[in-house]
Image 1 (cartoon, rainbow, N blue to C red):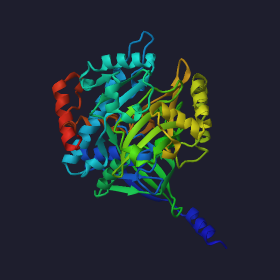
Image 2 (image 1 turned 90 degrees about the vertical axis):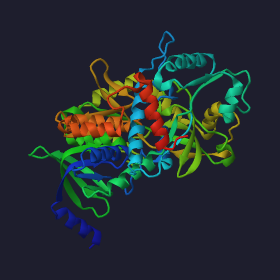
Image 3 (image 1 turned 135 degrees about the vertical axis):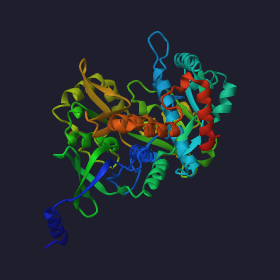
Image 4 (image 1 turned 60 degrees about the horizontal axis):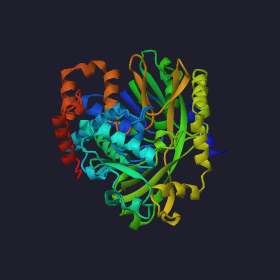
Length: 508
């Protein structure tokens, strides 16, 4: 008889092992790493277990090659500043995102000062953030955007130019062999950053593993999440190495499993999860293979998205620093797959469809036919089509200098809407039970960059009594001096916290 068959029969016949902790964090990416670190700093007595389906930490959306690596702070991302019919530009969302990224930097600064993050240059580098547009219409938009944003404290150092001499200094690779008659404009902020969220995640989790009350378990697939009779949650796991099953009981569960969070949230059965759906979007980069070209560009340059394109598909020519090496990426080129993770299953999308979310998903689909058309067009693109898109940014581009790098999967949130039936949301959203005992993070960009603010707000919602204590509040202010204040309203405080972060994180 087959030995594996006999072993599997024995495993099936066994009762699942049980253990109990205070908190279970599902997924070993930047969100769980950030939440785990915050909990440990604010409430070091809490017992935590981090469970991950893969055999590595930060191997999905947090991995450096699976995301743009942009410290999303609205310095260059044009989709955060929509143009209005009258030609004005709304910048409220840009201010909010910039505030949140400064919170992330303050927390990382604290962790460096505490010697928890030992080598900041391995996860963050200063790289200028630029927006570049072509043609009279978009130049007028960028000028209006600059005029609105440069009045704000957070963006006061933004510089705008249409001068081709200046542009040749800023972005020589993009200006080489460009038609002198072409109208082009750009903005620049030198304090922009490139962030390796994979490296940051690994450093945070490595630190957490030194704690006696925190455990990391890899190769653990969550099979079910049920509420026990005592109100706690039971997370059923399968060890993908040996097939053994076990259960962890916890007072609080956080689902930070990237695209798979929706599927796991649905398993919990909480009423707050009903009506949520997901729309998966894949992507590819063009990655430069020529070192001579790579060293000619030092900026993250974002353009305008095509009509119907999702926010993560805004074209950009990016300087990256990965594993100590400078890299150059262009893209991303969007695509469609029914997988919710890069290493997921083609059945992820069908498995997510429930009676409660069919109507929102159909309604959102009908309202976003331009997105469907865009994705079909992107999937059909040949290598020469991809090169044509790059040539708008870099006229001298040649295919032999570039190769394809597959990016990570993103799942956009679809939610119920009383007017439309369902709407497609671009961004991140926390969904939690009414009693705060379980929460999930859904959506994509700018999630990683704003993870600290998102997780602090989650703690306030899910641990309200602890969050009210003086000890908690004092520690929070120690870690994030601006917490509860608006940097955009306080120029002196903004300068102070930015200077502290610049020094601690070695940004120059």
